[in-house]
Length: 348
Image (tube, rainbow, N blue to C red):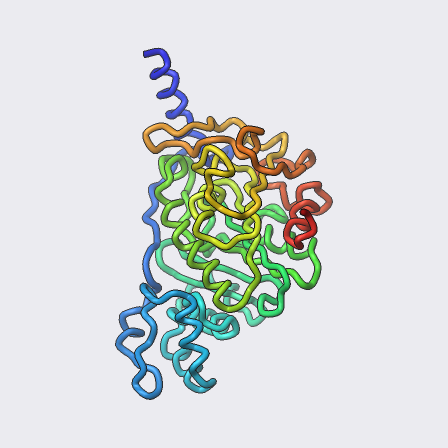
């Protein structure tokens, strides 16, 4: 009974703090965005030139999508782009320039001021879905020509509106991606992937795996889409709750490396338990509050073993000078230098 009592208390504590930041008082339950993008019904009712059926966004693999677009001429591609921007912009396997243009149109069509900056001509928006709080993926660098690709998977309280919101420099999805891109060479592209419904505040959403499970499906498909257009195997940089997403997606991606930073756990007992051939890395700074989160799993609550513990078996990333929970990408830090080396494939 004592052991059960201690475990119950620990699990309750995990609910209270597992993805929080000082100042958050409560959690708000979120409904995960799942399934094909908006506009899919109209897309499926349409046809390509010659009466060819369009690939089903909910069923076609990214490679099948890539083959379909390879068989279209420029005029046919642009007609689909104009008629179905929300589908084309979110269709993994579609040509990258086409998706960038489609998402500029889709962002403008929402008419919402909170998304307006995403539609700027210099932004490379690889995915944009206005459902729920909004999802977005943004590319920094030349993804078509890149020799190395990294994907930043953020944690709680991120969405399309806050993806690049003003905040402390080098934090947030876009800030982290920009910092990593600046620390690497011109041959590296970085994607800020706010492509899943994240938890808001502290609550059961942050402590359980429901949103992470839905996010893992989307992340696996996104990385398959990168592969379908010829991009190199990506490095995944997974922050906070984002590391739970990466842990669940690991066996379904072709990532070369998976880096968990500020992680509450990856829903695995060890790096080997992730079931991936990728190299697994972990970083935690000395002042990161995530160290106070109990590494337990009880009745679906909590995310399991600490990825920075020796028993987990991940490679450690130096982070002695990373400040707080979001300071890992600050210029001049050991962690950013290590991340850049991993991103460029310089660490063996």
